Length: 396
Picture 1 (tube, rainbow, N blue to C red):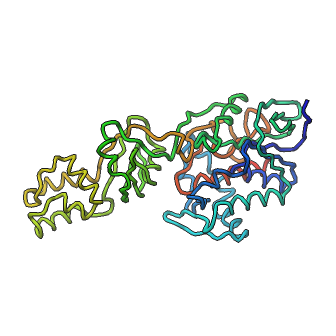
Picture 2: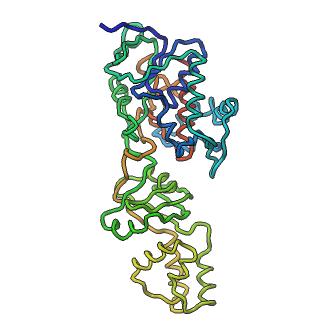
Picture 3: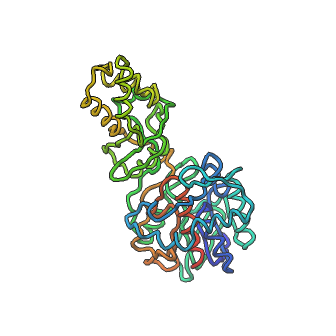
């Protein structure tokens, strides 16, 4: 029989939430072991933000999160804020910059954030056990027994920080949900979030030809609205605006896109009609929209009527209204393969919002993406990892 190692805390998952939890717990003098089947810690951190890690957002608030209980995240987000994490980044001398909408990225590499976290773990005395596949977990008299390919651990506390199903090529699995169910917890339906859309079959050939075209839009779906960039691809629609609304979309729903947000196109068309009455409406629209998109819209409209002089105000108003509420019914999404996050997860109803501890099983905690808390694009999901990890680490 394999030797048993005793530790105060076992954390399953060496991602953002797990490492943050380990740091906080070890700094309190707890003996901590972080176990992961991956060969390196923080793999999703490493690939995030194009390799520069969008590690938080200066404007992060509870309003940036989806959950069946929209109030659940408030306590953790207030107890460890984006400013608290920024202070740690600054203290390590990691250079960073702010992009649009408050997103913070490393100037250099995402590996700097991983090095900061692993360095803090090492200094605090937390142990990192990598390449260890988990074969079983049981409740025992003294807490929990975690059996792995690298050995057996007995701990007073067990923290599940295994993430969701997104990007399975990085090793993502549904293990955390299985553990939650094993101990009596319910799972809110899981699905891919922050994910590109795919074309419906009747749009693939014509609209897929616009691959590479991008523009700023306002995309809306089921009451949520985001003003960011949209990108046409061979397979469908991507870009921040589409990724954002994908978290609110359900199969069969329409996505409404304002192709000309914040611009008085009607006034421009009226002015152009007076100045260039013989100009084609589609040529003029090509001044305000990407030309390839204007040509595709012309093709969809059958090219007629053409000259601005032939279009009265009601006709111009109808054209503008169509562009401001362009309606697309996606065929689906790219799924977990390219999704940045997993929506849904361990229900929060039986989790303590201050400590992330199970109300069913004392000593069992859930943190990060495995829970039914999902952030908007732009650093918010990392902030939930830092905040929920710190909340658990300060209480285990």
